[in-house]
Length: 398
Image 1 (cartoon, rainbow, N blue to C red):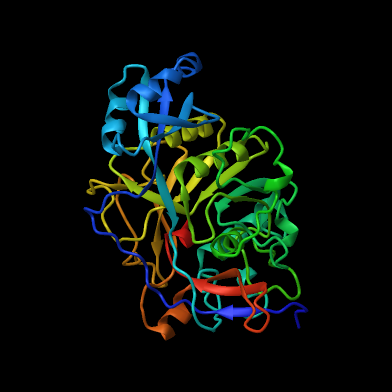
Image 2: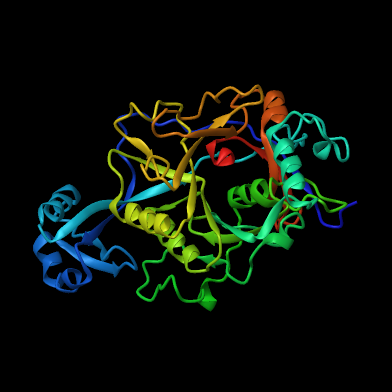
C-alpha cells in the first residue's frame, strides 16, 4: 500500500469551445518590439505620444510591455505603435490557456495509451501492440537500458506548476531549477539569473501541470507506482507560468522559455497551452526563433475547439508558428481516430497523439481519458494531496 493519501479522480468532460468570431483575450497591455536595443532606449517619450505608459522592459527581442491610457483607447494605441517606423512589432499581451478541463468525480482506470492491459510487466513484453510499448522495446534494444528515457534530457513543463513531492514524480523533478515565472512584469526579471528566493515556489494547486509532468516522466519502475510515464528517467523542469485557474499571458510563457534555455543541456519545451490569433505574436516568435538557434524543440497543443486550423482566420498558437522546431500536436482517441474536440490541419498540425475521449458519458470518460499524476484537495482536511486523474485534451497529447 502507498503510504500517502492517493486520491483518484474522473473527468466529466466539458471541453471549452470558442466562437470563431470571439476576439482573442488579452491583458490590456501591448508588447512592443523595436529594431534594436538602442532604439528601445530612446523610446521613453514615444509612449506618451502614443497614449501609453511603460510597464516593463522585456528580456528579449528589444521589447517592452506598455499599457495604453484608458482615455486613449486600446485599439487606437495599438495601431499607432504598429504605424511607428521605429517599431518592429506591436501585439496584445494575449492570455494563454491550458487545453484540458478539470476532473470532478472519483474513478480510476488503466492507461490505454500505454497498452491495452495492465498485467504486471505486460507493457515491456515483445509484441505489445501500442506505440509506447514499441518505443520502450526499441529503447531497450538500442541502449541496453531497462528504464526508458534519459536524465540528461530536460523537459520544461511550462504550466500551472508541478507537485514535486508526488512519489511518482519526485525522482525526476529538477527542484533546484524550478521557478515561478508568472507575473514577471517585475523590473528585475533576468532569465539567465538563478530563480530568486521569492519565486522558488512552483507548487501546483490546479493539477494540470502535474498531470502533464506525469505523462512525460512519471517514474514507472517503483514497486508502488500508480501510473506510467513515457520517460521513466528524464529531468522535469517545473516552470509556473500560468495562474492557478489555468490561464496566463504570452509574455510569461515566452519568458519561461527564455529561462529554460538558460539552464543548459538538451532541452524540450512542453507547451500545453495556447491562444487564438490571426497573426503570430512578435515577442513569442522571436523567443521561439532563438530556441531554434539553440536546437530546442517545442511541443505544443493544437487546441480544443475541433476546427481546421489551416482554414481558420484565428489559428492556435504557439502550435501554429511555422518554425522547424515547433510541432503542433492533435489529440487522438482510443481507436486511433482524431478526437472530435481537437484542432487539425495538414500544414499547421504535424502530429497526433493520445489525448483521450471527449464523450460526456462518465462511464466512457473513465475508460478513455488519459490517466496521470494529479493533485487535489483532501475532502476532510482541505489540504492538497497526491492524486491520479483522468483528463482529456490536446494538452495531454502534447
